[in-house]
Image 1 (cartoon, one colour):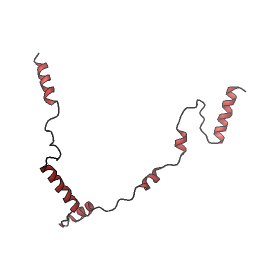
Image 2: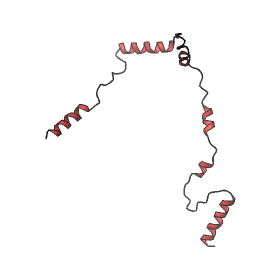
Image 3: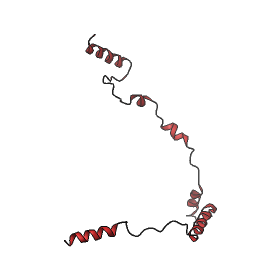
Image 4: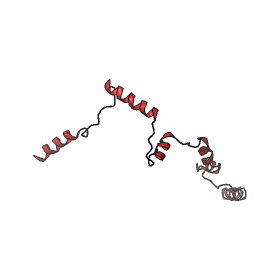
Length: 112
């Protein structure tokens, strides 16, 4: 049987069974594209977000009511204790690293 005749037969078969005609057998990803979408299943995996203490604070702030978050207070106290022991986060740099080295090189190259 001729090759063109076989290709015509395969093309007709693909049209009848709603398949993609791919005579070069390229990897087109059709297997993945035929699968059901996973979006709703992935979205339902995580529980719905409930009201947090921060939300309550933001609600009562315009009314002039103050709230006390004990966990936040404990966290700030632990940070202060760590700073006193010298274990706090390092201070932020005021200049970019290597900035002065670049400017010295730049000025030296201009004076030539």
